[in-house]
Length: 265
Image (cartoon, rainbow, N blue to C red; front, side, top):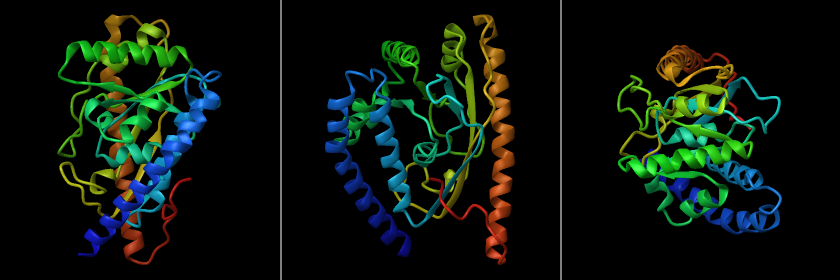
């Protein structure tokens, strides 16, 4: 019962935050779009809105760690494992802007879809080949505008702890443009909100950014090798991070100190 009450409160507070973002982002768009074709400023407002949604959720404790680009305008093809819907809220804590490749159903949501389009995020219908091709073209456009793109190469959330096979698209894109791959490992969000459910649960989660992998000089014949290399790196780091989070949770339950109890900012 308590979890249902906290879930109801969090969804209500999230709806208020998302609604408040609409006029704020609209004004920012009007004043910055002409000099910010990558919609960096508007996008950052949306990501901070996601951070605000986490701050009103009493069940979640999120942190970030690892590599931070020295130049936030250095474009990367960013890839991560996909644990749950909460991944979006967690990764939004990273201190640079990325344009998200997301399924079209999210863009159809009132207000939320409008905000994502305004921010320059990219819609894709996974079952439509022409939509997938168009989405990749939009990813190229964002990278040319010196904004990173965020892609989940599994394509969807896994219902188990096992990573799904990675698709080629992100790695082909990086090689074609000579843009580095920026791998990230997410752990802990699977318990935050289960696939197919709207109920929140207690979760301690972290995203760890790994060192970028250059692609200059690579050919399309190396797409598969790059894909498999990145998947192995992410899986290893995800498993390591999951173990750290579990040990941290046990320390808290036994009265020990917990360096991860403060949400990232």
